[in-house]
Image 1 (cartoon, rainbow over the protein chains, first blue to last red):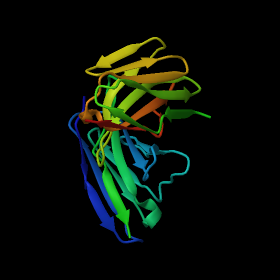
Image 2 (image 1 turned 135 degrees about the vertical axis):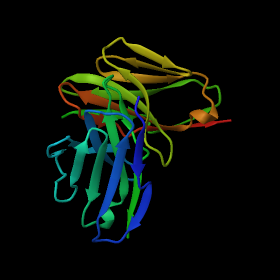
Image 3 (image 1 turned 180 degrees about the vertical axis):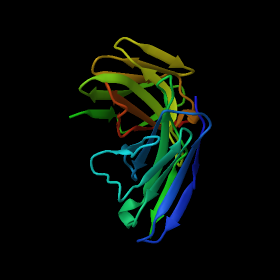
Length: 113
Length: 110
């Protein structure tokens, strides 16, 4: 298993600003992912955070809006840039272990006003 | 198009009343089928991974099964603490892409 710490747990931000979310894992993992869960909806993959290279984004998500860093095998950040109320959501960090089990952080509840 | 559909959307059970949740999937190839439990305000908690048709896994009052088209999460004699949203996700072969269903909100009444 893996223990994931995500910060902040929640935030209220002004539109037009940016928020950086941190994800720390208690062990080295190859695969780290960022998801979005909009109110009343399921999880949607934003991107795969690749260590030492640029993140791989899913359709509908772009680097300018959601820049991601992955400096090592235990840490990643997701920035939500130039926020609008439509970005209000829960953002989740996930890792996949060698047992191919995917674990999630507690999420960051973002409200943009 | 790869797709996962869960039913019912919501389910209310009396304590001790067993039932099943359904997860139907259509993917180009299945690497694994995952079940998670999500409590309000928290991230999904891993429950099971199933890899091939016919596979079954159990954990306390929960039992997950898998066929070539769907998975079931059977809840035997549920308790109020089993109340949560249950999510399933299909992972496409050769990828790490998890396709989540919209979940089943389970409420168990004492």
